[in-house]
Length: 523
Ligand code: HEM
Ligand SMILES: CCCCC[C@@H](/C=C/C=C\C/C=C\C/C=C\CCCC(=O)O)OO
Image 1 (cartoon, rainbow, N blue to C red):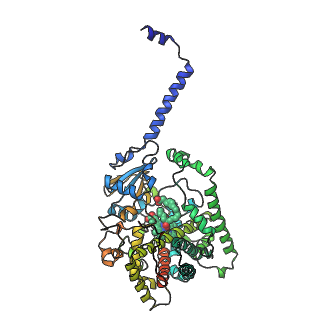
Image 2: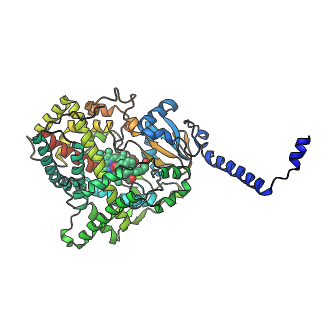
Image 3: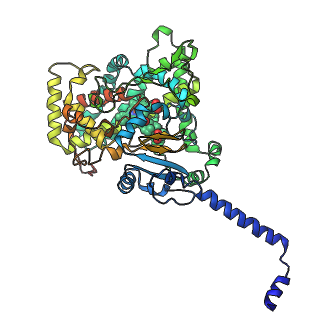
């Protein structure tokens, strides 16, 4: 008692006890902040791995998405979850549920995952736009990828292919091994610059072409940087991100913005009759447009067209009627068919990037697979040789006769989908196929996982173009093969991608055999 009394008698300075008290309250608040978001998935009955405070399950993804998706789905089921920082993510690998989300209930899920750290011009591009803003821009752009427009692109792509063949011929004659992916990157950059912007970039002739250099800089972005961890743990700080110095990001953004603005100035200075009706011109003409664009029966890129028979079975696009949208999202069904300068630059930016990276990867992986499967390569070469007994050169219409080529490309896209995962946002609490989905969650579509799901793809690791015969396609669920996504928000550039890939490969396999070399990483 004596000791206790002595202790009680010793007066604690009020400043120390106050600080101690405040510190304890701070710790309690910090613990609450660090843990409170991590109940939403469990409340919906969505199973998920145990999240860590502040970062959730972020660190699962250190080695990429594919392995994590496979582990999560095997352990927690086809509808499972995780926390990307504080953001609840529902992984949906149920094909029927995907059909509902991406097509049937599209008006409930029209938006992608929000990336609040995005800066201009990325933040103005179609990938990032939302709701009526997205619908207006998408409806303006869709016609530039119509079948009629693709027919006009054929000669331009053939010109770029001539340069590609010249370069490949130099490599062939040298007898040296070379990086064919780099050749294809320069080819696809030339194609997108030419067909979309009427600009000869000629990156195939300039090994240090600035367009290719800056596009590569964009894709070398690393998500796991110290400052990203701060923003993931404290997302309310993200708006500050755009004010933080980021030399690499700003240099890349400014390069594309300045180049695109220069191309626009050159186009505006051209006599009207000399202006080519390309993708850029279509956007520029909306600056003074008085037209309105109807959004009620929103037209989409129809995957059931003749160029991509692969997709006729997967996820045929219907004209989606979005006029029945929920009251709080009922949109104005017509809007001014206009685009701001920032929107024009934003679309040009994403088309350079998307047009460069995805198609060049697909070309390179297709050649890699054919190099490792010479019997398939010979079968394709036989089809190509037969094609050239009937035609002098490929175009949008006649390439559709090359059925085996389409099967080879489809199988390459299954094994190596450039868009291996993409997302939709849950803007309101809702139910899909009996599963409650909470507002604010992200729905993640694991295309890469679906493409290797043994339930739909026997021996999924094997390269078997015959998986895409008409009969095989008809017997498979359409939403287990999503190389270009599905529904009104699917890839707007699919037709152009398919056309340039097919035209390039027809020319390549008419003239060359592709073989692996000692540097080829097989696996
Ligand atoms: C092999 C080539 C390509 C592949 C595999 C591919 C794949 C994809 C995928 C998976 C998506 C997301 C679809 C969804 O969320 O349902 C997408 C969206 C998009 N792609 Fe592609 N793409 C390719 C080429 C291109 C090209 C050449 C362009 C432009 C010239 C392009 C422009 C876009 C745009 C703008 C979007 C966003 C569409 C929107 O949000 O409305 N893509 N692409
Ligand atoms: C939407 C994911 C697949 C996009 C494939 C697209 C290529 C785009 C090229 C550049 C954009 C780079 C990254 C996209 C950043 C965020 C995407 C939105 C987030 C999400 O939906 O998960 O090919 O056409």
